[in-house]
Length: 351
Image 1: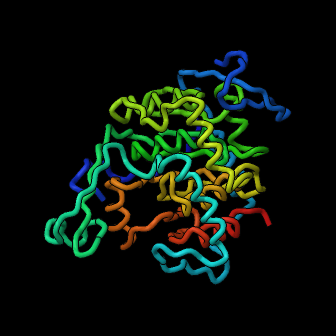
Image 2: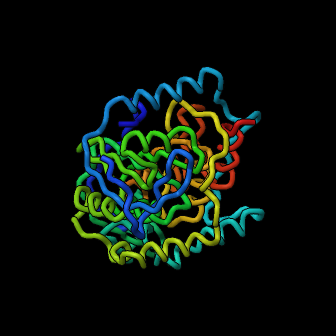
Image 3: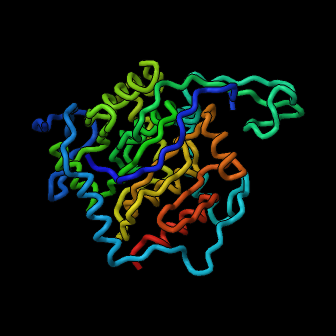
């Protein structure tokens, strides 16, 4: 299993009243596997196998090797920006508009936790200090249905611009799961080769669940597995349409075509970054594009509407807004998507 040691965990919270191996390739409509010379071959396969030992040590060794020649510190005179709710930096307007396109093609899939519902209540019903929306003198009470929580983050190897990977990221948000993402951009030297070693081919997404020992390819199979293990077993409608699901996910990426696809040479940090985010947010998308391009492993603290983790972030940072980055390698904690993207490039891209 590939992983980083001593990954911090947040407590498991029950929902509260807050509506707030490898087989020969076969032809299919599924993802692409890639041979060692990066020649794409259409392929479809699903595997459930015991995790193979030694890959955690490989990832840690790679990080240690990188960190022996690289130092990690915030850029000179760096100061985290103050959060600016619902504002867009003028030079990033078109980026955000383009990143919003998937919301329309995917009908906001991934924006809400499973079983989400909302109702207007009086100001007195929700105490001060508890996360909620306020609307014309009322508060919005949000509820959702949270399934069993994994003890360790599920690990997913993927990249931002892949429609099959997007489908899996959507179920991750719907189930409100914390996931350790290993970005696998094209020509990425670290995690793509590990997928080939573990599963026999470079095909994405690829999931490893350290809680059960299950690993598999195939986006639809991963979605069914996660829904059955950490949800109520039902696959959401917008993720159950077969080729139409993939097609709509592909159309949604047109506005940011090529972003989050190819590797930018970077320095590999010893610890995964943490990002509070959810699929469907255009602000989170532009940050994830940079995380993928720089091949930066990161734990995503999923917090779509209806997530109890919105309260956790509110208490932690004094404010709820996504994306929110926590970098254990430099100690930086910050809001604001445009500034987060600039910070990541300044800190981790090879100069």
